Image (cartoon, rainbow, N blue to C red):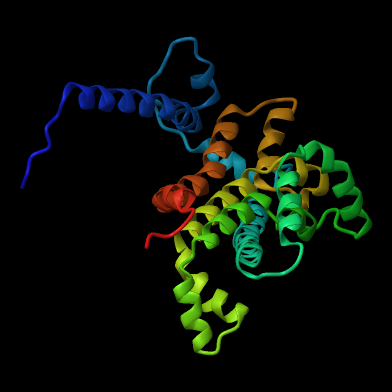
Length: 278
């Protein structure tokens, strides 16, 4: 096997990447450290690198606090994210394929309109969206939180660019077998866009899980809270339980860490996949 020559430039690059990785991990260290300490240890003026002794009381307080339904909030966040991620990705894929491959009049104007929506700040559409969802009875419901996030213009744009370079030979072979536009999309185009589907699905899951303002406005009752809203109540209470606050942060971020570690390779490949090689 050929040995890789380690030049000074490569060594320097590894050092820079290593330092950057450590800096990015520092907040996670403080969060995990605080979750395993008591309040006295956290506020102690003498610095402690590790909890001594380790305490799990913070995690117990997170789930036993009667004013914060953390377990139910985690369940709500999981349901919202697990529905939003695949549905929004599939809708983006369908719209992107239609705009790229189905020759219908006005598809250029539709694509231009979708691109324009990317330039509109979310704050400009927040109030009209809330008025519409409220008029339809979506306040304090999960569908009211989910529905506005099901269409993602960014996903449509990426899928359109991907399908524009999808080999026409594959489509022609499918049409020779009697497939229409829907059959070609479902049996040929969609299975070949797995990396992009995984990438955008993961990003959609993370975005839905981290959403705060919209779930806060729509989910006004504790039964409709998401994990981020439940976690924020530890900051707004009169007496802040620091171990519970850190423990809640660990609990809410753990699903995102797992999803990212599983799908990190697909995220890079999917964003880069704007076409297919010959």
